[in-house]
Length: 98
Image 1 (cartoon, rainbow, N blue to C red):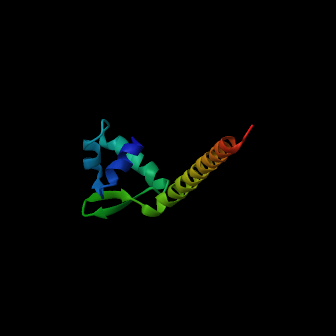
Image 2 (tube, rainbow, N blue to C red):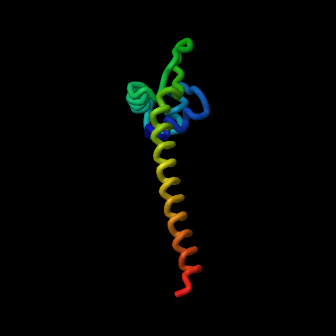
Image 3 (cartoon, rainbow, N blue to C red):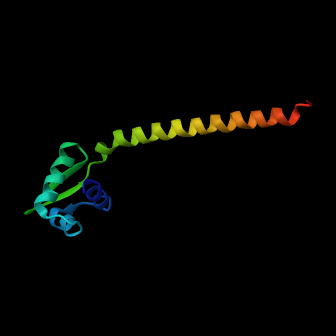
């Protein structure tokens, strides 16, 4: 549910009712999930009149982005090392006269 809420908030701020309308759970459950996401620093809210609008907190996603970049960089480097090693082995086998 929390991932679904984050996905909804990608498009911009939304009130709890609009978020709940697109989920198979009620407003009280959505509010609890939003509270957890807010406590984790992933979501922020702003009171506009009588409504609370919830939005993604960009600074809350920075650690996740950094982790993903680091993980992806390590995976790409390992792949490049693997390709280089196999390319070198293939070149040696092709030029070995024995």
